[in-house]
Image (tube, rainbow, N blue to C red; front, side, top):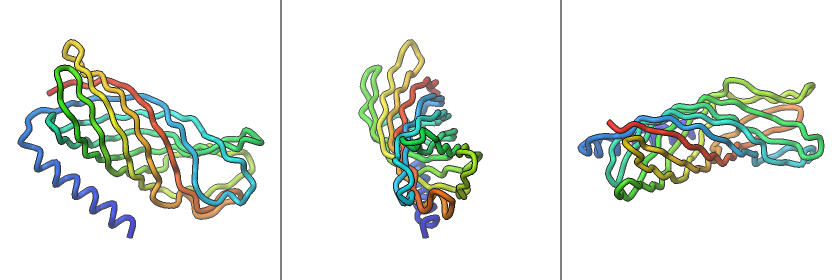
Length: 196
């Protein structure tokens, strides 16, 4: 059912993209940043949860430069959590494909946006403490909310982006420490884009 809802949301994003295609132009760019993640769910009372810091990188294509635009993205993001007591980290590494609908107010050289969308995270690797097993699922759906600011500097668009990714499905089904957990992550990044 969740996969169907995610698919319907992606189709809705595609429809908005076709509706905004009359607005010529867009921005192709890349961002680098940090993720600050944790989990919600059952850790069996064995872990005192703390945030896990990670890395994120994203390539994006903003289509349209009016009040409404659509932005598909591909990237890499590290999520997970930390145990405060033992200082051990559980890191889940994902390749991410996302689609956002952005609403902004264009101004001379300065363009703030708010956005919402969905991301599909594909698990590529995990780093867990020795002797611990965590059965991480291959696909993690996320609802994404946030905002960005684009500034035009001598023909180059500099972008600062802040977002929250809320996991929609369980990351793992079984393990010696965790079960039925959902990712939660704040991501802050900056980068550049080229207008076309």
